[in-house]
Image 1 (cartoon, one colour):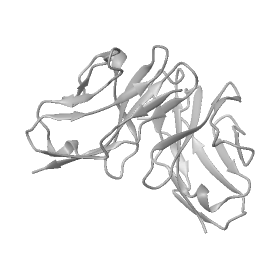
Image 2 (tube, each protein chain N blue to C red):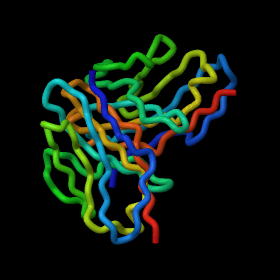
Image 3 (cartoon, rainbow over the protein chains, first blue to last red):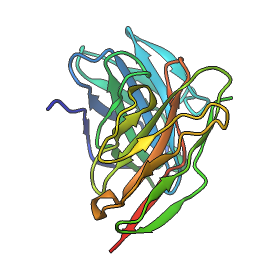
Length: 114
Length: 108
């Protein structure tokens, strides 16, 4: 069964450093998402991506964040200058037909900023 | 504003007893409602959506527009139901909003 895969599973970085979180969505899916979950809190929407551009973003997704689909298979989330409060589990998801269809989630990348 | 409220952080239920996980939402239009589940060490996955009106693993959920609720129910809990359950809403824009989640713990 096809799956969304995320790498790495755990990333530790120093405050102020740039990180890139990688995701390979399911191949015939058209909508891609990033969510995050700070420990003990709810899953929060960051950004959705469709037709090679951001279609929706939350207030969390400020100028420090960017997304890219560089090669037609990977979907990356870049955090330019990490802060301690960026420490969270980051989930990538994809869906075939938009948010009203089933979203398939990756296993997540745990980002720890020290 | 779109909002999903799950009032219970933790729900402990004896095996064989009925389960009800509460979910209320706030949305001005006609939303799509979902329940997602995350079993231990597994990824978040869709359990059911209101539009399909089906029962998955014995769970059902009815959308009550008058009460703006989408409670998840199962008549007889099983140990394998222990997991984190998230109610979620999609309002037609390109995002799904999740509630805070309820941890369901089935007692033997």
